Length: 591
Image 1 (cartoon, helix red, strand yellow):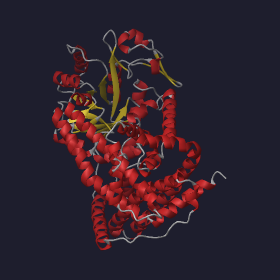
Image 2: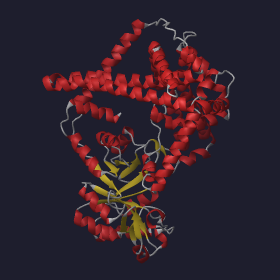
Image 3: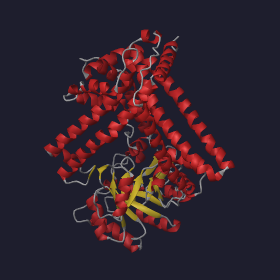
Image 4: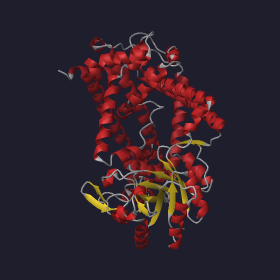
């Protein structure tokens, strides 16, 4: 019996969407035009003003806190947040209004805009903070389809989740946190529709109502939304599969025609994905509004009154021209994407499938997997010897709260690293340099020791590389820009890199030879800017195959990954003469 109400909700959502599909698609198109033509340019302009006021080219993890010291930039940040939050609210609210207006009156986009703007007064108050918290809690629902145009690219950076997933306690913490946030977000899912529908409701009122309402409807809500996602995913995948069939067929019988058929099919797939995304948001809105109105709404017959659409003579030609332009660009992409990628594949702390990170075993494994280079972390002992180790303390791998800098080399040698069933010793940099000479493997050495006022530790590392005639062979990188630029001055033969964990705006200026950017901030503009400055740009940490394809195809100078063998295979595939079917698959992977 528990399945009967969710089934009825799902059926009602699909029926209602099908009748009013034009309204939903039109609303989605108009909102995206509003976002692209007005909202995004305003946010971009305000962001540039903040950079200009503070004299920054871009915002990094080392400069972000400086923004809050300037009252003007603080006011602009508040304005950006207000516009951003209201834009997110507007997109979600728009779908809920369209889901609610059926059987009542024809709803126009302008009417929706005015109705939602009347709620703006609640955002110019402390309640905006509540909505920001609510919005952060709702991010996990993006994974099941309830995401907005402004939130689709927001996620926890992969280098954070990758680190958490390396330990059992980290996995448990990550899993428990996600489960808790998902539970809270589901309990708050009715906050926006209640806030939108009730003229006098505050954001806090919507949150309180949703928390109470889901005490009795949580399971029904989960089953209804889960059912919609499952059905919708199957329909979308079947649609994409059917659109691949003409391409696969034409490649076997009439190859000269294949580029044209492929371009048309790719355009249709893009249209399908756009409609599918809009449809999923609409279906969620329909289901949530239906449940909010309780079961009596489910049993009522759906009105099939379809309000006449105006401006058809204008809309269809515009859509036709848009599709023609998309098809032209798709044809250009599909016929000009064969090249030989030059991206270096760098193993992140060595390969750790059967070895512990930053050990000789991990470096040997990286060589076997075809890595072009191995990234290692170097710290300095109490008696000024260089060893390989990543963490601030030995707690995770060495079962000790001590730091490397608190121990002598002899004490470090007594430590046994353990991860699961694996055991190993902490190697010295000197031993690793000898090993990589034998393996013919280059190193990307990350400086994990603090910069000294006299630059003594950098000088000691430079001398070690100089004595072995390795200054021009190995690369050196670090998070401390001053330290890396000092290293560059002391040893200009060394390829030096500045690590940027977070970046908004233009690339920071540095005299280093390359920059290493976390993939959350990596984009085509930053890559082009680096190349114009005669610098290289590396992406880290790239572990998903789709992201490997993305950054290798983009032309990143290097990717740092835990899986070099997979990355090399993808790099090889991208350099081969792929079929048009594979080219379309690659394009969809890059989206």
